Image (cartoon, rainbow, N blue to C red):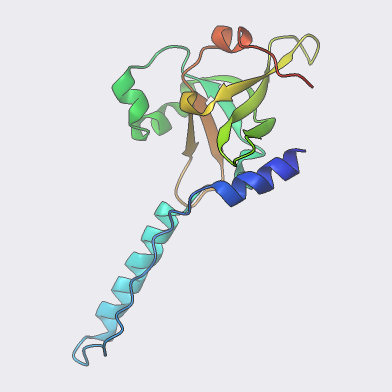
Amino acid sequence: MFRNALFAIALTLPASVAMAQSDSTASDPSASDTTQMEEAQTDVAQTKEMSPLTAGMLEDADVVSLEGNYDVQMWENADPLSTMIADLTRIGGVEDVMIDTQGTILGLTTDVGGFLGIGESTVMIPLEDLRLIRSSAESDDVTVITRLSREQLENLEPMND
C-alpha cells in the first residue's frame, strides 16, 4: 500500500526543476567557452537547488513537531524551519500518503500515542499542517515538520485500518 501511494504521489508532485533555456537562433560566435561553461554550471546548481522532492524520500522521513512554538509568518516561510529541525520533538515516521480519488494529496499518516507500538493509533496530518524540509539541496534526507503538537496529534481522529 505504501509503495503504491508513493508511486501515486510521485506522479502528482509538481515538477519544479529549473530548465536551461535554449535559443533557437544561432549563438553569438564571440561568446567565450568560459562564459558558456559558467552558465552551464549555474544552470546545474539551480537545478539541484530547485529539484523537487520525490515520494521515495518520504519513506524514511521523520515527523517532528514545533509543539506550538511558531507564529504564522514563520510557518509560511519555510526557510527558518530548516535551521530548527535538530531541536524539534520527533513524533514518528511517515507511514503513508493519503490521496483522494482525484489525485489530490490530503496529507501524511503517522503513528502516535502508545508505548513500543502498543496502544498507538494512526492519524492523518492534513497537508496544510505540514512542511517538507530537505537537510540540503544535494541531500535526499527529508524531514516532515508539523505545526500540530503531540497532544493535538493524539487527539486527531484515528484512521480506520
